[in-house]
Length: 312
Image 1 (spheres, rainbow, N blue to C red):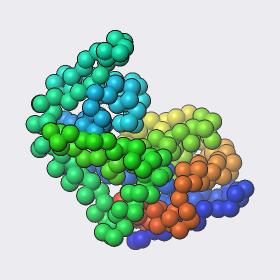
Image 2 (tube, rainbow, N blue to C red; image 1 turned 60 degrees about the vertical axis):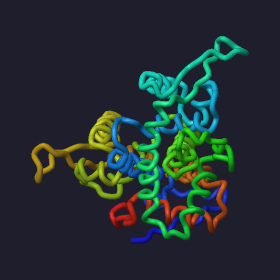
Image 3 (cartoon, one colour; image 1 turned 30 degrees about the vertical axis):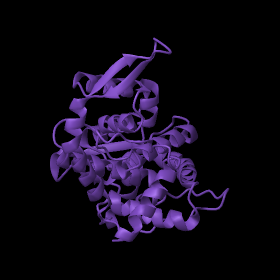
């Protein structure tokens, strides 16, 4: 089923009704990230992660960069970025040396071992990107990536340096990396507008349970695009908040069926307009027609070409 995105509402329009999940870009971006992670695990051998490859790509394009710049261009926070760099140093794929201008700064350089590894890894990473975009028409793929970069707030050319021939890598401006950047932008807007009251995954759980009262927890996780552990944690938190009730599933003695409480339904009336505002902010860089096409194609990526009726 092809699902078209909604036009952006006029400024000031508020709705107490939930948008369909397949029209919420933050939800679709999270699903797309999960698809990318699954493809990566299937197609890229070994234990190299997407963030680690991003760091290698940065250093291939911007050699002798300090760690702060590498972490920023790879779209990592300081803590996770330091961990990624440390792991690559232990692999002997990165060397660190003190800056001659400032002994407190370390400059990072790729090693010959990284060059050898990347020659076999990069074709696999490209296969991941090709598979991610496979649900889209060939004529739309370049435009979609451009729109995704705009949503991710990545300026044209910002991630394009002068890669060294010795280190075969993909540019950072590939869809898998841009999806992660866009997810970070969405998370930042969400935190700002929701003021810490509710997370995006929590809203997805409430949305699904509100749409299908009595849904079982396993099916909830599938529709909300959450793994079983995360689903359980969120349901426990929302139940503790008095927003979800749980009863034994008569069809599965170990399962639970879920329903929203009156408190949750009352609170959601004020939350839906804020969710809409987050999505408006996220898509601001795109023109209305671009938003429609972008959401349509993002849904295809998120559901690997077949957005289900149930997610609407």
